[in-house]
Image 1 (tube, rainbow, N blue to C red):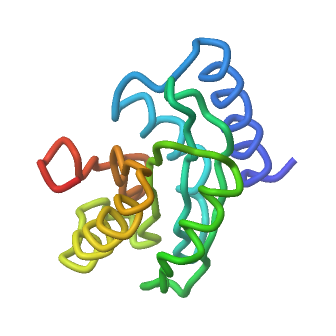
Image 2 (tube, rainbow, N blue to C red):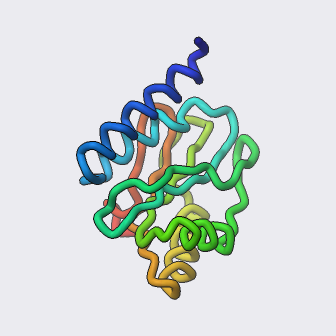
Length: 145
């Protein structure tokens, strides 16, 4: 089994644990789960953890894929998928293949744009986690989400 396969298997185990525990309780818990899902990827991905009204995970999906240093995100695609899944809350995430989890100004702007668009549909953005290496940074914990 490859390293990527092992990390994906670990992410599935963590997702199963989160679903059995009932819900995501903290940015640290979400960060551990998401590091396993995308830290190993050589290109940037942007994904969403779709949650129900009790913050149980409905689905975790990579919605956009980019290059080594960027990824284009479309609010319409995120909103459409959230409505299809009947999600009421979301945790946004993306990786920085450079290994530096520090959020950029562009990351903050994407978060704000998605919060505004999804807020019109009564879908709440709880957090946006940036994954770099084996670390994650929560924009919500910094007051940015």
